[in-house]
Length: 290
Image: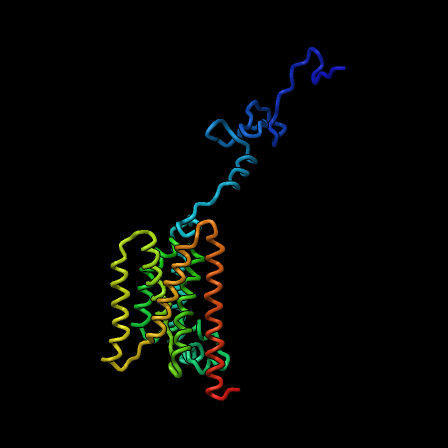
């Protein structure tokens, strides 16, 4: 027995679009061979493809990444850098309007030992005077965008916050009764990261080395001639942390990049927690806090 789709003597049935059955067409998708109308056609290197095949192909395309594994951002705007600057400026305005904010959020080791652990991070968003915040924000404005573009927003955010925390942890470990604030630890961390990233990309890093050197000289020499103190512990802690984090991000093996970068970042955070716990126990015993 044979089957005839069209009775003898009748014209063959006109094919229609697979998505729009009321639209006749003779064009087929070059991938799935289904009929497609002009509305469903997407130009391809050869012929046309349907919307389903175009969507499936887009899902299989690997996103473009930077040398350090970050997804290439469509917008070149350094969103994280500008956000950090805005937060610091807003906190400075609030700090100027309320003297109590400085006492509540600045880094003071006895208060941290008594439970105010948040001071280790909030202190990085406070500043002592206009010159203090002006230098730090200008440095962030000039150094931040290039690092954010190279590392990506997530890694850059982690770098900044870990550098700030690294500076605070060293201050907490090595000082006893100093009131400390400022984003300098984070900024020094960005300086260290710029050096590491520049070396990885085979760039001339002599300018960065000069900036780091001049700032370190200023850190140790300036207090000798003035009555103002500069937290060298915060600067050194931030510098070392930033360079270490950037080295992890820059030199992680490509086939295990995310695992190594994430694991090492977590390990640094665990190290900070251990140092904070040890110093807290030490200070509580010293001050008889029980």
